[in-house]
Length: 269
Length: 69
Image (tube, rainbow over all chains, first blue to last red; front, side, top):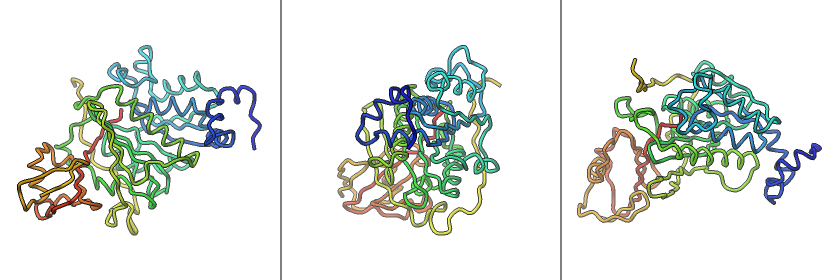
């Protein structure tokens, strides 16, 4: 068992006080490695809370720079950082919050050629992306690599999330099969989202990551949690692994391929 | 017939309904953005016209949510 310093004992005291966490649980958190894909609406609160919790290594993947229109919800970035790569901006905030955390940054967009290599060192993966091509690719790669992960999606006033242990619990494709046709999708920027929704869902995903790391409670396995902030109705739908799932059933997925991604940009060209 | 849709008990005058009929009756605007689960099973999109919804079925419309950034 590691020797906790005085400052560590103080910093993490509210975790250590929890009977379900304790000093052993905090040690698990400090030794864990979590990859957050997307340093945006979901990634911002996820990264902040996991850094505060003391996750040992946080990987952050994002190819974008901070845009003024991001700041309505992406709380890890600031006005002064418009134009700065999001991974850099996030890294600065995490370092200021908790210097114990090692941050690995990947200033890139994930695709079928690089995702497996990036996932490899991590214990748990979190999807905080904004498009179906990425969400399905992350699912495929996590199933192929056998990495537990959290799916998350938000739209307008609603959010959904599920936690997946590949080939043990239902995966994203068990429920949603494949990306919807491009023409049908009210894409990211064009659909809009209430900023606080990103915080609601992101903090649920962060809590799920910590539960899996700690082996605690009942993660959202075989459960799709959805909420509608207009009514504050939360609902869990029970899923079961789809015996015909093209990704995780039988021999399932063998090789990654990129999905077609509809264009999503509101800015004048 | 009686159905449970997204957790709510519902009564329909119709005695026979396909998944496509139900999507229309429920005014689902973008059926392409919904995954349909009847009892435990997910229904393939091409089978919506030919898959019957039966008395007492539990139906879930799961909406695709693609945002996150």
